Each structure stands twice: as structure tokens, then as C-alpha cells.
Image 1 (tube, rainbow, N blue to C red):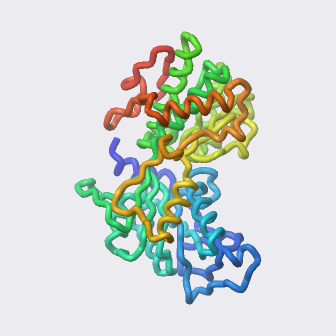
Image 2: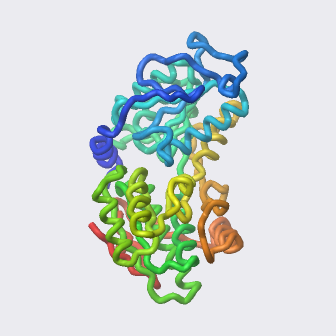
Image 3: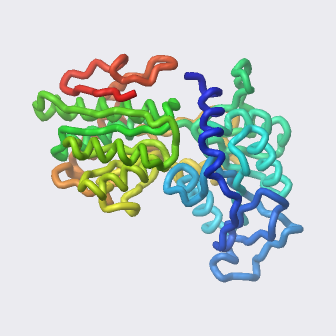
Length: 387
């Protein structure tokens, strides 16, 4: 499945869920129109002596992907990294929310942020690949952090990263692997993977999850791990997704990896209803539901924080893609909040080190393929792929 088709489908599916709304939190006003008054991080801490008015502008901004900055997922993780640096250093900041999930709307919203004075704009999500491709030429004096993608034109005939763009990619199969490994080590033999759209990041999460489960099963001498596997085709919480998760739990599935934005909310609801367990994605989602036993995390806030810091330190790594993986502690499980009964911190440190040292080799999905039963040669694991 080509990324362009995915982006268009995602926009159609999700546009109706968007709403342009402001935030009552100091320093976090959202807009899709003219920039509102800007609040500095210092003011948000009660120091009004450093207030920045609209004529002065603000220094850094985030343009949200489909959804909001409190989505408990990608937007929120990126926002928290930007905000953390801003509040530590007294830098003024703001976020913008596009009205539509289209290239034109994203580019227009980036333009509003630049007009507001931003010299660094964070763009979370692969749907920003084409908008940032265009923006890097239109705003040569502005730095862009692009999460989960690399800039390219509309038909993929040109892929180009200018010096003012820092694309960040993650090895999603690695946190997926850790989640599957931990789930089996903790005593679960019947698992589920409920993904959103079958975009590359979601596919890699799922592949890694299955491989991690199989790896643990071989260590434990377990003959058969069962994984129910499905992509919902969207990133929304729906009655259909909740019903599917509930039916899996009803038929014996012990833990489901909810991988795809608000799809996780459907899994959480089903887990709470049926007494099942849920694995979160992207950020630590343990605070969302008692059913969440762990989360397969991209260190989104860390990657954005590092990128913002590099911008202000005049060390911005533009012009090349930065990869966050186990090697640079860019992924992981939140062991401090995980609710395991058997899987220990020592177990986690050991398997994480194996990943970091390259002792674990993970299979990459075939081009345009999203079915793990085609690519993965699992020894102790059976996948039931539900279309």
C-alpha cells in the first residue's frame, strides 16, 4: 500500500473528527487563524515580567497531526518534549491545529506558525512528509522537526532533505518486540494485535510484537502462542473496534496490543468490560486505564526535546534522518509503571541490551505487505490474520 494512498484515506476517515479549539493552559493557545497573544514559559510559571506580546511573536511551535495535543499518543508526546524544553529555558511556544488533514491545510497552518514568529516548527506524523517538503523551500530560515517521516513530493518522484529539516524515524519493531516478549514472559499465551491503518509504522509494531512473543516462547519452551491480528483501517475509536476486541477477550485472548491512536481507547474499553489486559503504544498509557499493563513506547518527547535543544545550541542536525532505536535509548517499555507479575526489571534490562547490542535480528516487512503470516517464520507462534 503506497503512503500517498494511505494519507488520502486517512484524511477522509479522520477529517470529521477534527475541531479547531483553543487551550486554557498558559503558553499553549491553539489557532487556525491569525496568531493570538503569545505567552512565554516564564509567564506560565507565574513570572509576568517576561511576557511576550503578539507584536514580538514566539519562538517555537508545533502543528498537530490529525487529533489534538492531549491525544495520549503522538501529538501529546511531541508536545510534551517541546514544552519541557521551553519551560526549562524560558522560551515562548504555541501549537496550531489544522482544520483538515490535507497537504494544503497542513502547509497553510505551518505558514501561520511562521507568520507568528516561529523559527522552529515541530510536525508530528508521516502526513507532514509532503507539506514539509514544500515548506523547507518556502521558509529557508525556519527549522523543521519531522516525526515519523522524510520529506518528498506528491508522487514520490523526488525525496529531498534540506539543511533546515530534521526528519526523525523510529524502529517501531523494537518496542513492539519488547512488548510481545514481556507479555509472554509474564505468563500470557493468547495475545491480540489490533492496529489502526496498515501504515509502515503500525505494520512494524505488529511484526515486532509477534517476533517478541515467539522469542520469549522459545526461551520458555512454550509450544504455541496464539495471536489474533487485525488492522481496523482507521485511527479512530469505534464501536466495531471495541466489539472485535471484546470478542477476542471473550474467546480467551489475555492481552491485546492496541496500536493506532484512538483504536487503543476501543481496546481499553473492551479490556475493562471483559477483564482483559491491554498494551498501549507510542507513549506511556498506563494512566489511561487500569487495564494497561505496559506500553510500546517511542521516546517522542525525548527526540523532540533533543531536536529543540540542538536548534538553540546551533547544532541542528538538518539534512539527514535521525533514527531513534534501542541503540540510542529512543524506544522502550515504561517499567516504572508497568503492571507485570512475573516479568522483572532485570528481565527487561537483559533483553533490551540484546536489542541494543544487535544480538536480536528482526524481520522487516516486505514492500507493500502488511500480513505477518507472509514474512515471519515463527517457530512457536500461530497468527490468525483477520481481514
